[in-house]
Amino acid sequence: MPPAAEDALLDEIEERTFRFFWERAHPATGLIPDRWPTPSFASIAATGFGLTAYPIGVERGWVGREEAAERVRATLRFLAAAPQGPEPAGRAGHHGLFYHFLHQDTGLRFEQVELSTIDTALLLGGVLFCRNYFDRDDPAEAEVRRLATALYEAADWQWVQARPPRVAMGWFPEKGFHHLDWTGYNEAMLLYVLALGSPTHPVEPAAWEAWTSTYQVAEFHGQRYLAFAPLFGHQYSHLWIDFRGIRDAAMRRLGFDYFENSRRAALAQVAWARANPRRWRGLGGAVWGVTACDGPADVELDVNGERRRFWTYAGRGLGPGFDVDDGTIAPTAAGGSLPFVPAEATAALAAMRREHGAHLFAAYGFLDAFNPTFTFTDVPVRHGKVVPGAGWYDTDYLGIDQGPIVAMIENHRSGLVWRVMRRDPDLRRGLERAGFAGGWLDASIN
Image 1 (cartoon, rainbow, N blue to C red):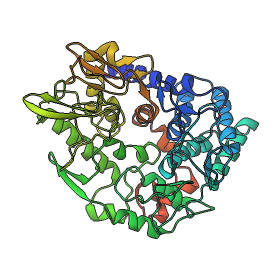
Image 2 (cartoon, helix red, strand yellow):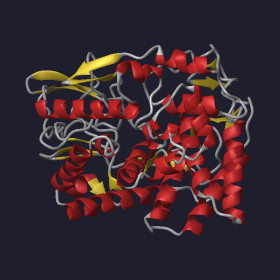
Image 3 (cartoon, rainbow, N blue to C red):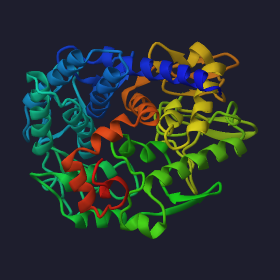
Image 4 (cartoon, helix red, strand yellow):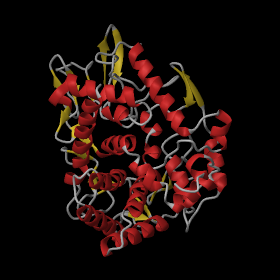
């Protein structure tokens, strides 16, 4: 693709995706909906992605700096004032951690969802990015920094170590801590780095050692990398942490860094799509990308002479022995991989835009997912629509899938989020306590 055409494509995708966060944030709370236009609760993780998107909009000239600072300040004010405590209702969180989903208009716990450590970490990724970006000496930006610091320092990572040294996935007021801890490799890299770097409630380096001790190495379609089947696990932590050239003990043993690991995972997916061993329609050529996303229906149907299982929302992915795959393709898988495989990701986004048009690409960029194999017009679908002869198309945007697209396009184009986050002393401390060294961590000027 000629450079001018590539720039125009990425401009359009990035701005439209940014507009999802800017226009769909709740006007009073600043919280971002889990999905839209289907009515939904707010997602605390999507709110972190939204906070990350706002400075990107400033740098690209889509919104003014003062306007963005005020949006961030209002959101952080609301989060900082949201009630916390052990009660099962009427609270936004406990011990500085937040529930996975909140009511958009009140910011209080939605139904009986868990207090989520990973979703809190994703929120704090956006909070800390804003703390470092809004660095001017004026009242609004000063308050952003103060509120961001207060929110980060309130998170009590030690409390949620139900089975030290690892960190539990969550907590419920009705039944206590989640029965599972975060073990690797997946999106919780960010969680552990933030917990290690906390100036108030830090976990010990043994937590990182316990985390990395559970890594498994995959060999898949010509690539060797740390196994995690959905691509979002190879993207989320990378939105805020520049892993290029820095390694911990686990990666020193493997001989490459986490950025290279994500590159290999993406390349394995590209090769799998081109081979298309299950003969999914619309997959291959330039089109690839399997990760957690919406899907057409929870049903088994005959496809290509075989009985195939389809899902609605599911943790789709690829890898040895992993079979949560139903021909559903998620644009966020390629969009969030842009820094790792720029040529392959750009080609995929261009092909999706060109081949599927308004069925897939609308006001806020790419809708969440599509499945050209699912052409069954007589089967009810939960979200989206079946276009006769073309397949199933989602009609919703998901905040947690929009976030990687806008942030990783910008990291690919300018390195903005990585560059700003390299200045954060708490992030640096977390990385160093995890044993990272090399690259920008060793440089005197970052």
